[in-house]
Image 1 (cartoon, one colour):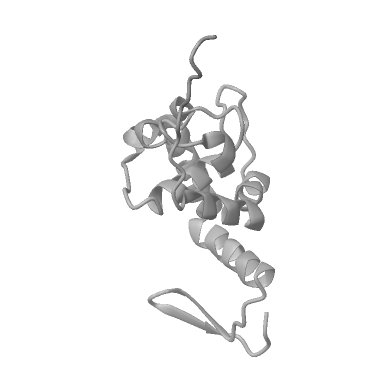
Image 2 (cartoon, rainbow, N blue to C red):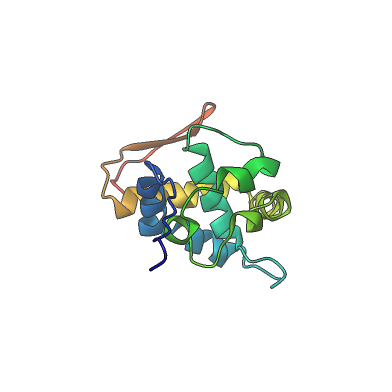
Length: 142
């Protein structure tokens, strides 16, 4: 009988981050606003954004061209979606997603996601502060 081969992948706390992204529907929200227009890429804009969130909260903050190496030992099938490979998360795919967010107005998308999070998690919210220069008061709870 041949010896059993094992392989390991590192998930660490990134499973919690990915799980929350899935629960909140972050990728789906972005994909509704910026659908992928080409089948040339294996990753949607929303999935690319989730990959950037996972990378950013992975305490490494790799630059875009280093993303494939960051995800080399991560279970992408569990974190994002089956069939995504580290090489799919390249700087071209991530750059396209960032360009789409810019075209959509990053502040508006961030606000939409913030409202979605507050509503989904039923967080008490009396005021919103979108940046350091603007404060918006809310008289009724969201």
